[in-house]
Amino acid sequence: MQTITVEELKARMDAGEKINLIDCREPSEYAEFNIGGKLIPLGKIQTMQTDELDDLRDEEIIIHCRSGQRSMMACLFLDTLGFKNTKNLIGGMLAWQEKFGSTI
Image 1 (spheres, rainbow, N blue to C red):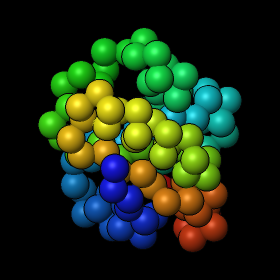
Image 2: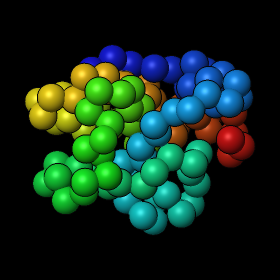
Image 3: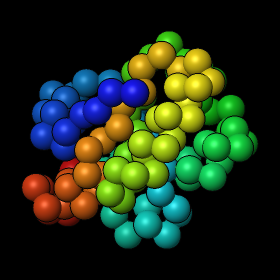
């Protein structure tokens, strides 16, 4: 697992880069505010109740949550399953909103 800052992520998004962005929060949190990542709650990731990630084993996956804790757990879990390039968004959506407000 590596890390990425909200500034680095926003710069890449603004540049139009293709990013595999996973939001591992719960649906209610996602509904309140999101930055366009694919919603796959941590519980689904940990039980691998999703095949949506299988094609991304060798690609970069950036995972975020509210504060960075759940996404860190998701990254570590995926790493044990052989995912090669997981990145945790430091500070999660709290850091994003502190830095950029509620804009994408």
